[in-house]
Structure formats: C-alpha cells, structure tokens
Image (cartoon, rainbow, N blue to C red; front, side, top):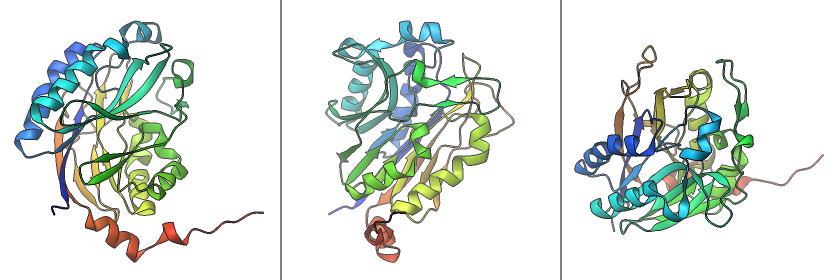
Amino acid sequence: MNQTLRVAALQYCAGAKPAVTLNYIKPMIAAAVDKGAELVALPEAATFLAPNRKSLSYIAENETNSPSLTSLSTIARYHKIWLLIGSLLIHRSGDGQLVNRSYLMTPEGTISAHYDKIHMFDADVGDGNQYTESKNFRAGKKMVVANCAIASIGMSVCYDLRFPTLYRDMAKEGATVLSIPSAFTFNSGQAHWHVLLRARAIENGCFVIAPAQCGTHADNRRTYGHALIINPWGEIMAEAKTDDGIADPGSNDDVIFADLDMDAVRLARRAIPSINNTRPYGT
C-alpha cells in the first residue's frame, strides 16, 4: 500500500474580489496537478482580502450559494484532487454570521470537513495597522481532524499557530498532518513564522503544510509569504521563493511540493514519544 502523499502548497497575493483571485489561481492549481499533486493547499483568505472593514461584509459570500465555493468544488472534481481551501471569509449558512472558515474538498468536489478559526487575531504588530478580527468574525469552537487519503489532517488557520495545545490535542486525536494556511503579517512573520511552524511539527511528530499569502493587499496589509512544508522531525522540506525586499502583488507567487511519507510520523514519535509521555501536573 502506498504510504506517500504528494502535496502542493500555494503562495500568492489575494485580490480584493473573489472572481479576480479565482481566475488568477486556477492556472497555479492546474500546474500543481500537472506535477502530480494529490492534495493542493491554498492559504488563508484564499479568494480575497477586502480593502476595508466596511466592504468586508458586502464582498463576503453566503455559504449556501457561494460562487467561490462552487468554483473550487468544480476545480477539485475536475482535477480529481483533495483541495484544502485555507479559508474563505464567508457568511455561514443558518444564521449568516461571518466566519473565517477552512474547507477540505474531496476529489469528488464534496465538502469532507470544515473548520472555523478559533483564535481571533486581535493584535498590534507595529506595522501601522490595527488587527481586530473579533470585531468582524464569529470565533469557532470546535477542533477538527479530517481524513484525507492516507493522512489525517488537523485543520487550523493562521493565528491558531500561536496556541500549541490545539495542535497537541489534534495529534492525540490522530492527526498526522497539520494544516496552517496563513496570511501572516510581514513584521511578525520575519520574527516568528519559521520557528513556530517547525516547533508545531517537532512537538507533535506531524507534517506541517503552511500555504501563505504574500505581498501588499488592498487594505495595505503586507503578508510575509515563505510558504512551507515541514516534516515531523522539524526539517523544512520545501519553502516558497520569497524576496523580502519586494512587496508587489504577484512578485513572489510560487507553488511548492513535497512527498509526505506517513511512516515518518511513526518514526518521529517512536524516537521522541512526547505525546505518550505527557503527565498531569498541578500547582
């Protein structure tokens, strides 16, 4: 039985309108499939980043009739791939609340699982922008581990990266791959991106897939790029080419690949069984 999964992670600069971004990334997804990708992963805010808070609610689509979700479902079905939509900024069905929702699509184009970002990015990273995600989005409440071919994917989004207990809990629930699609700010990315992602892989003996936004967006935020795929020993298997001196949209677009051998998870966890060695403690 084949125990290797070929994955691709995309890096690009999402535009201000979903239709424009979707037309832009379709060739990138096709190129990933041409190189054998079985799972293609998109970053957080995969289809747009709004120019301002006022326009966000108007641009965000309703899940029940989302053109973006329909288009990405069609892409997954056409190419017969697993497609991880890092997140859509979308009005959820039922109550219409705005959520930052990640989707895992099957090769048949159906939704296998979805995850609502739990940790809201309310921060001041010194780039001149105030980030108050909690003012716009309803936070998720549920951890999600989803089956994907031979892997079990622990789903998360961007700022979740800074909360390690979430990933430990996912590993305990059987996750072998951690998805961390992001639109990481440039300032915090320079300081923390690589070390945090490698730490999550090492702590849990998991692969990490981290597709990323890169460039300057319509709201003037600058994202860091450096999309990564990391093995369970914390080694970087692939990193997107990123010139940190260039902030122009599209100038750092890239697609990275890696073959994930699931046996590497078993070997890493056997070498350092920290999950099994965890002990209760108190004051």
